[in-house]
Image 1: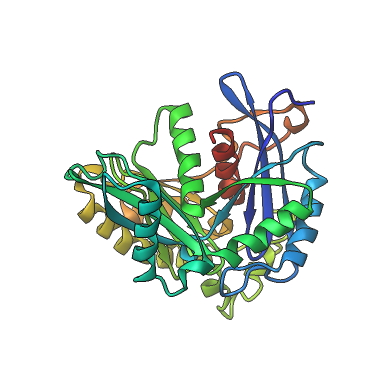
Image 2: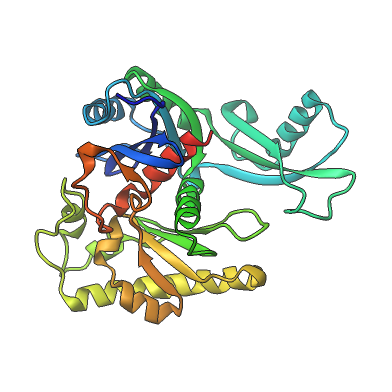
Length: 344
């Protein structure tokens, strides 16, 4: 059915597993399918590993909504599950010497033994660290083997082929980069992903490494209110429709709380990146449905738009009826991962 290999991005969350399938058609990406399976219980534990049995069941359900023959998958890990470190290495090191140096650097800073970690490292572009001379900056990423392996086991058992494991932040930034490239606007915009327990803010400054912060604020904070103890369950139904509409006061209260959290992060970012100041933000994640973007824009003093991750994809004929609204913003990470898979 599809002449080009499909790229599938799978976003494994605590409350649902989402998938987006893209195909390269000439100069544009085509949305071939998207699906979400809501989980009855959390699949991720406090150590960021997953219950492979529960995940396998969810992936098998997802496959029924994906085009026949879909196999190539890109996955993501939460940034909090990954050790990120930049070190300087001698430019004359051989490959085995570089591996040893990286292991030594991790051994002195990781809370886990190096032999229990999967490690990836690569040299950074010189314009990110222009002062490098006899040494070169290397970016190191490391995570517990169990964190990766429990995901890979379920994916492979479902008959899929995992090719890339990304950071969740990078998935969002791939989507932002694609949107900016296709629209020609929204330069120096960040992403705010409002989830159940955490809100993530990330942006890619010009000529600098990606900037990311996790904020301990999300839907769960709000759902503990005596006025709205069913909010989280409402948001994770199969359809993104509230069983009981939120009042304007409730939406205003949550938006103000979110703005208070974000102001501090934006001030910190702008102070450390004065040449790439924040111009606006995309809102995505399950929490965007309880936020007034107009009020948030006034409170933050930057432009705010709801993210529609499918806005700049062509649509397969089977998806002609897909809404152009931002109600699919929960697929932002999965869409970014699918874009990453196309570009691998």
